[in-house]
Length: 459
Ligand SMILES: [Zn+2]
Image (tube, rainbow, N blue to C red; front, side):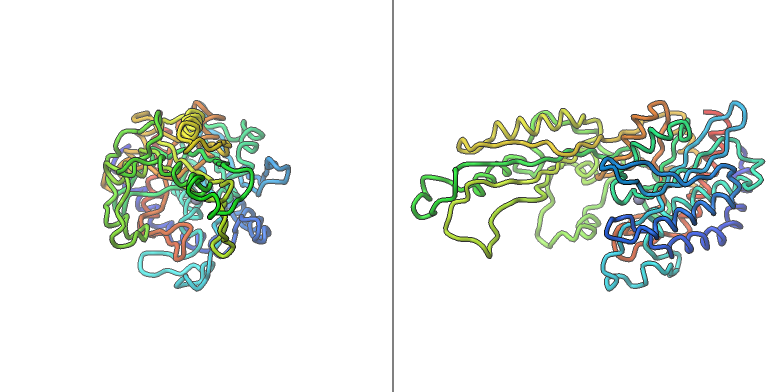
């Protein structure tokens, strides 16, 4: 690719951008919250609106499809649009989702969450970044490469816009299996993450996995008087606290034997920024050792996310006979969730305090993601990002999980997965005052058009 091609594409994206921004604004006006308590007619409306956008973009084969969820109910409507590959050329699957998180309390927003509002270079609104900007990034790249005519489109493309990502993608696996042929691709671009900061692009190369479950601890057949038996018998909450305290060492690192730690990330998360972003109170120390980004992306993390104990209001002078805790263990990239679950179960059994009866009940398991350090698709993406921003991308991780990535890896093991996105550290996805930086979005569109061109030149 010559620098003339890049300059021409950059000019084309700039020319197309006002219309793309208008399309993004129209999508943000649809309150497509996929959480069950919200009116699902809006999710259907956003599926219809994105279907129309893809049709207008000249993709010949556009459908709204759904698959059953594990509970037997119908999954949310997804939109799939295809343009077959030119003879011998690869196919790229472009993923984003058209549903959004609930807006939360409108009083915490400075603008109406469903009325897109531009302030300076940022466009505010629920879904403006996560992930309606991802839809617009795909649309923009296709338009920049000449669709609806499409003479310049050197690859086959399948656009896949999910409708229930913010509700945990319950029908995703069934959808992939039902539409395997429709979705099969050589490269999968998941535009649902973000960049490192304004002006510095990033590829998301690792995601943590997850196992969770419950510990039930039993010490007495029934509750007894704390004056009569306290001193010779410890209550179940105290015993559970002693067990929970064994999960971390003195520095706050997870102390469960046998868990994997990945290599240190190439960029660090500034401690002051972490303190501000997490609302950590003055004087509260950070937990763990090593770089901050390493603690968040490359190491396991264990949290107690729920506990059944007597409430303070209902407390009486009795020793609790049993206590149940819900444990969430985030897994480092490279960690097998089954092995992590077994390590956690063994730790719980070994550290049963004072001979209390402890039971570990396995819950959900989600696989971590670790991109290959180098591959033809990664090289193409890095080159495209470098041209679009004038700055090479950094590799970043995510402390959370995108569980459907594991499904994509399992159903399409041959495909190269690239996790990209439009968010920046100020995007506040899922929170109040969500926004996208329009200058960065324009670069994301250009980078994706360059990437499709490079993939078309051969991997
Ligand atoms: Zn998202």
